[in-house]
Image (tube, rainbow, N blue to C red; front, side, top):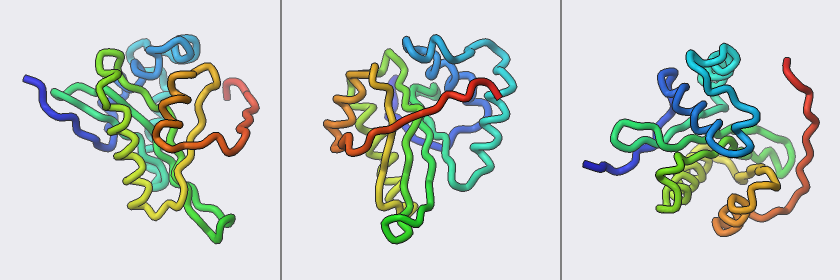
Length: 156
């Protein structure tokens, strides 16, 4: 029996499923470590996210299985008269659940969560190699209004 999906804050026991989602694509396969037990760096990062009131690691589950994830960061700022921003990162949907509207539902949930936190803007970054993701974000109303840049610092 298939039940409706449910969005919720991630808990520590979700970590293996989240890591598997992050590793299950061409870019993630080269940079993630899906071995079990989880790499201690993932455990430490989860603890930092979970205890920070301006961070939320969220999952979507169906039939008690994690089938998607994303991270929300709530960022205070002085620009735009002190406006808060919502940053969406690490969006993944299990390959068996893609193409059925779950991504749009995840973003609707994430945007409403940002709105409830009084964010005036929602932003995200995505790798240029993710052409399908770029089209999806544009279809949702996101615009490529800025040029993002990163500086890789390597392992800490």
